[in-house]
Amino acid sequence: MSDASTILVIVALAAVTYLTRAGGLLIMSVVPVTPRTEAFLDSLSSSVMVAIVVPALLTGDTGTVIGIVAVVVATVTTKNMLIAMTAGVAVAALTRLPLGV
Picture 1 (cartoon, helix red, strand yellow):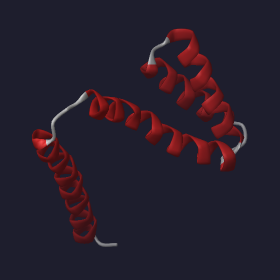
Picture 2: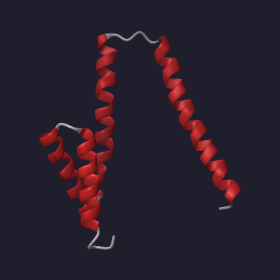
Picture 3: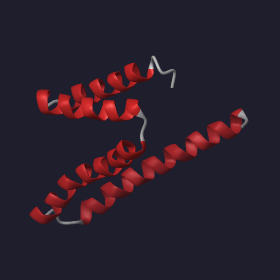
C-alpha cells in the first residue's frame, strides 16, 4: 500500500468516525430522553463490552484469558476502570512475554 493510499484510508476512517459521532449527537438532540431511554443508553455500553469480551474469552489465547481475569479482579478490588484496564493489558503482555506470542 502506498503512502497516498494509507493517508486516504486514515482520512476516510476519521471521517466515518466523526460522522458516526456527529450523527448520534444530531439524532439524540431530537429524541426526548425519557427514563426508559436513559436506562437503555446506560446499559448499552455494558452490552458492547460483553459483545467484545466474551468472544475474546472463548477464543483467545492464554494471555487474553488471564488478562480478562486480571481486569475482573482489579475492577472488583479497586472499582476503578482505568486501573483495571491497565492491569489487564499489563498482565496479558507479561503473560505473552515468555511465550513470544
